[in-house]
Length: 430
Image 1 (cartoon, rainbow, N blue to C red):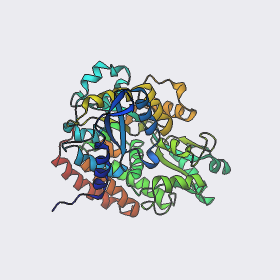
Image 2 (image 1 turned 45 degrees about the vertical axis):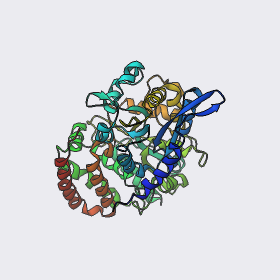
Image 3 (image 1 turned 30 degrees about the vertical axis):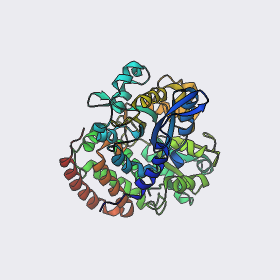
Image 4 (image 1 turned 90 degrees about the vertical axis):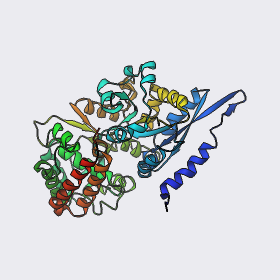
C-alpha cells in the first residue's frame, strides 16, 4: 500500500485550494484575470521579498494573476519530484540553478522562445547564463536572486575585544582564540537542517585546493578520501577540538539558533548566505548593517590560490506538463526584469542577477558584497547544488555525522567515498 508523505499531503491540500481558483476571476468588473499557479520555497526566515515581487506583477498585469503557494524548504525538495510528473503540476516552480535543475531538466519546458523574444541575453551576464540557465544546449532557468556565502559578525562583540575582520587564516585563528579566551563562542553553526554545514566544507576546500579540483570532485572524477579532502576535515576538526563552535550544532537551527546567538552576543560570527542581511534587518531585529552587524569574506588560506565566491542562484522553471504555459512565460519575462528583481532583492538581501540594476540601488553592505563577488575569478554553487542530488544527500549526511564525531572523519570520508562512487556509477552527471 502506498502512503503519501506528510509534507506532500499538506502541499496537496494547499494546491487544491489554488486549483479551485484556476478559472478566470475578476479584480475589477470588466477585467477578468487567469491564475498562474506558482509553488515556491521562500518561507519563514527565507521569505523576504517574494510577496513584494508577486505584487509588482499583479499590480501591472491585467490578464493574469500570479498566485504563490509556499512549501517548507526541505519538503519542497521532495514534493517537486512527485508533482513535476503529475498531470497537473504548478505552472511555475522556484528552483536552484546547477545540479538540482539539471536533474529534472527532462521534465521542464525549454524557454528559448521567450529568451529570444524578450532578449533576455541583454538582461543577464553571459557567465551567469552559462552557469545557471543553460542545460543540454537550451535555456530552462530564469534567475531571480544571487546570494554569496560570507561571515556575518556582531560588530559590538568585535569592537568590545578590539578585533578586526580577519583576512588570512592565521588572523582568523587569532580572532577565534581571543574570543574563546574572553568567554565568547567564536562561531555559531546551526546545522539542524544539514545544509548549513556544507558551507564549511565548500569554503575550506575552495581556499585550499584549486577550483578545478572541486569541479572534478563534484563530478565523481575525484574520490572523497583524496588527501586534499581529508585535509579539509582535519582543519575543520581542529576548529571543533579547540571549542570554537557552539555545542549541539546538529540540534540548532541556522536562524532561530545560530543567528540568534550572534544577535544576542553569545557568539561572534556565523558563516551564512546573504539572506542573513534580510534576517538581521527585518522588523523583529532592526539591526543596521555596518553599525550593528557586518560581513567579511571567508579568509585566505593558500595565498596563491585564485579566489572563489560561493552561493546559490534561485530562479524559475516551467514544468513540461504545466496547463498555463502562456501565462507562466509572461510571468517569467516580467520577473526577469528590473522592478521585480529589485523587490525581491530589497526584501531578501540578495543581489539581483539582472545586470540593468544600477549599483546605486543596493545598500552599502550589498554593494560591498557585489564588489567581493566581482573580484573573484570564479563563482561556485554550494555543495548540494554542484553535485547530483543523490550524491549530495550522502555528503550532507556525512557532514552531519562529522559534526557529531569529528575525530572519526577518516572513517566517515572512507564510507562517503565508497558510497558516492556507487551513486555516480548509477547516474549520468549532466
